[in-house]
Amino acid sequence: MLAAIVCATARNHVPAMLLGSLLLLVVLAVARFGGILYALPVGVMTILAFDWYFLPPLRELGAATVLVGGLFLVISVIVGAAVTTRAGRRAVASERARGDLAAEQAALRRVATLVASGARPAEVFAAVADELGRLIGADATFFSRVDHLSGEDGEPEGDITVVGSYGRVTDDLPVGFRTKLQSGTAMTAALRAGSPVRITGEALATGPFGAIADKLGIRAAVATSVVVGGRHWGVSLATSREDFPADTEARMADFMELAATAIANAQAEQKIRELADTQASLRRLAMLVARGEPRVSTTSTTCRAGSGTCARGSGPRSRCRSMSTAGCGD
Image (cartoon, rainbow, N blue to C red; front, side):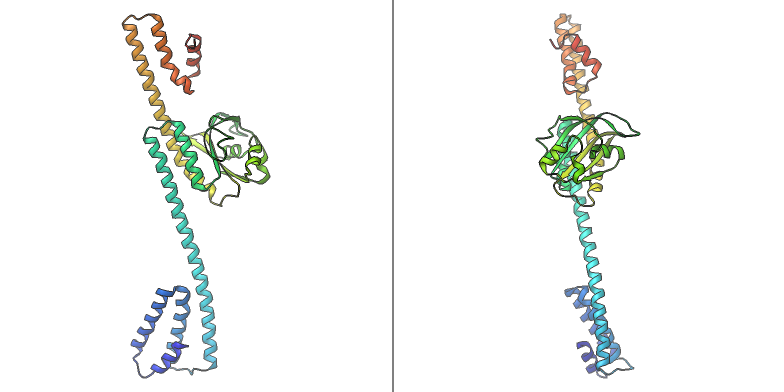
């Protein structure tokens, strides 16, 4: 109504261009300091007042025009509120997405730095479990390697060995814990589907981890397979006492897809170190043979050359068995 009074008063006294410019400045000021929610109805009413009470044909400032102006004002407020709410939601979602991306990149940088520093695979596995748990807000995570995986066309079969754990399951599922894949678990479902799987409620009581889920009060679990070198290398599982947000599966899959590269690099570095150790031992053996050392010395050096890889479980089984029968364990 203030705009109507101003336009009616300025009629025949102020140039149209000057008054229009002043009214525009007022609307811009409201938008700058009050936001779109206030600027939209103010702008609508200002335009109507300028048209009705300043530009011909003129209208009288009576009950009818006040009613029409009031209707325009109410509609403008409703539209402005809807636009503001939607824009606010988009801004919040965009800000959250940027924050999630930044957190994921920071977690991956820490894992990559660990790999670049020459960390052993066990350290990398533990770091992946830790970073995944913190990234998605899980109460606990564990990261397992799958051995002897079969049944690719049906229910996956094989053994899983925990290689990294984080949070509340560390005591119940320590590194080295080994069990068989069983039907009905999130890990088996993830390996079968090749994509993240969520299990909630009573379904968590199925399988070898039912007692642990009940003990820790776990109400939701998300599992995803880990593909390294084009094959199913393992599976990761995150748990929570409350259900996870809707985007947890996508975030977990994205992180593990990139973390798989770090895992592959860590394993490759480990193999290089093992090869270097074996070659060094073989060089020492060759020097002993060249000097004509007794058989006891050469046998001892041969045993040391292979004991490291067998102790780590990475040496060929045939070689480890032959070393055992050759007296290396005596």
